[in-house]
Length: 364
Image (cartoon, rainbow, N blue to C red; front, side):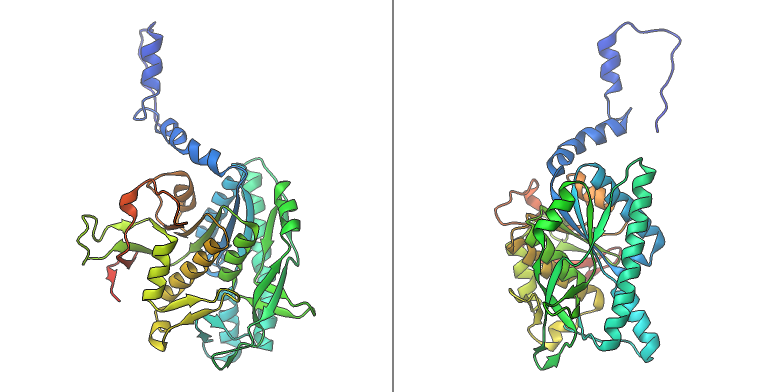
C-alpha cells in the first residue's frame, strides 16, 4: 500500500487535488479496480465450472490459494460448479496395493473392482477437503454459502474400446441440470466427484476433466476452467513468418484448437467423450503434454455443446483472477468460439508449439 506525502500547506484547488488522487501511479489499486470492473460486471450471474485436479489438493499452498480465488469469484456473483478429481491419490494408493505403477490406456484408467473401491474412498476425501477449504475462505471474507453434492450424474460404461475392456470406467450420459440450476441460482455451490451411477445403480469411474466439460456443456455455462499443476503455454512456431513468432499465445479459437488436436492425432468421440489417438506414437506423449492435449480436447467438446469459452490455467497464486478479470495479464490458454472477436487479434495464430513454463520450446 502506497503512503501519501503530507504537506503543511492546505491546498484549496480541489480539482487538482482530486485529479492527483486518481493517478494510477499514486493509487495503483484504484486503476486496477477500474480496469477490472467491466469483467466483474460481465461475469456476474454467469455460470462457471471449475475442474480441481487431485494433485492440486495434495499441494497445500497452491490449493489454499486457488480456493481463495474461487471464493472471490463467488463473492463477485458467479454461479459455481466444482468438479473434483482424485487421480493422483488413487494412483498412489493402487501403487502401494499392487506394488507397481498403474497404467492408463489413451489417458483413461481401466477401473477394476479394487480401483473402484479406492476411488470411492478418495473421492470422499477430495470432496471433504474442497468443502473445508472453500468454507474457510468464504468465512474469512465474512461470507458463507452451502456446498451441495449428490447423485446428479447418470453414467454408462465404455465397455470394450479398441480391444480393451475398461470395466468400471464410463462416461457421463445425463446430468440433472434443473436441480443444479436451482441450487446455484440461490447462491449454493454444487460439487461433483468423478463417480457416476448407471440406471441400475452401479458406480462408475468418470474422468474428472471429461466430467467438467460435459457439465459445462449441459448447463450452457459461460466458462469451464481447468487448473493445471504442471502448466504448458503455447507459442507461435519459430518457423512462422509472422512478426509474433515464438510469442506466447493466450487466446485461440475453437477451429485453431481442433487443428492442433488433429495435428497431434487426438480426436474426442462426440457421444462418449472417449479420447482416440491416431497411433501409438501419438498416444505416447509425456504425461504433461498428454494431459494438456486431453484438457484441450474436452474443452473443445464443451464449446461444441454451447460453452462460450474454456480456460486452461496454472495453479499459481492469483492466476485465476488475472485470467478472468484482466485483459492481457492472464498466464493461461483461452479457447473461444469461432465467432468470438478477440480483443487482441495478434494473439490469434494457427502455427503453434507448446512451451514448458520456464523451459524451452517442445518440438513435435
